[in-house]
Length: 315
Image (cartoon, rainbow, N blue to C red):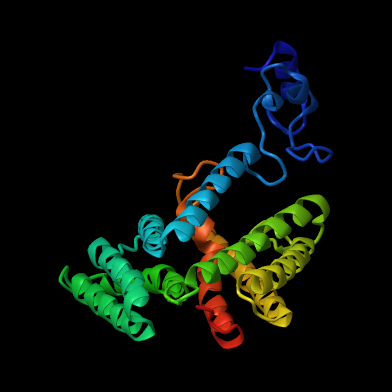
């Protein structure tokens, strides 16, 4: 509720009830800024656009769950991944439904579980078979509803299967190795450092937008911060946890900075096209599982390939 003074100020302002003020970041009028019940009285997010204490608490909790599952038993972590990926599939399916693309739920969920579990048990060949069967199941499921409008649904279903569970299954391939838990810790840790470094540098020194039409808050300065933090984390974790050479860690860190950034921009593009801010709301301060997995999904196959080629497996 605004005060009488603020209402009089709004009526006489040239821009209408809420004129744009070029000297303020939020565009509120001076009367609204000083009014007890005006716009400034509401809790505003910081430059990051999030409630940072809540986001930090949720992020730490998720990190502890992932780390504990990896240290206790591999199969527990696999179960955590299956739950997270199934939630992400649901969120992306719900988002595509707003664009009138109806992704079949049953073959998508069953295929996700089969790909994640199959790749852990049987490796890449089983993953390829499970993905192929998932695509066939989606095709038959959509055609059973009739030919009208089936092509967008088939394409959407295969896209969801490839984008989420197929890419995530490369973490299962890493996990299956004798030192798989440590490899997954390296992969997740380095990728998270991309988000942390990019966020910190971008908030403090971000001046030049990287892709303003897709993600206005992402800057080239933040990208540089991602590269530095990822390379430091890559060198440290590869040497300490996997006994690999420092240069392999540097290559991993540089690659993760690139793939994590591309993954973030990819999901931002999808959300822009669908007209949503977040894919979900299950994680306070973060959005949905897709909003947390975007960087990890595109990074998983690259991390698996680099670690497989450059860092020998340690029993």
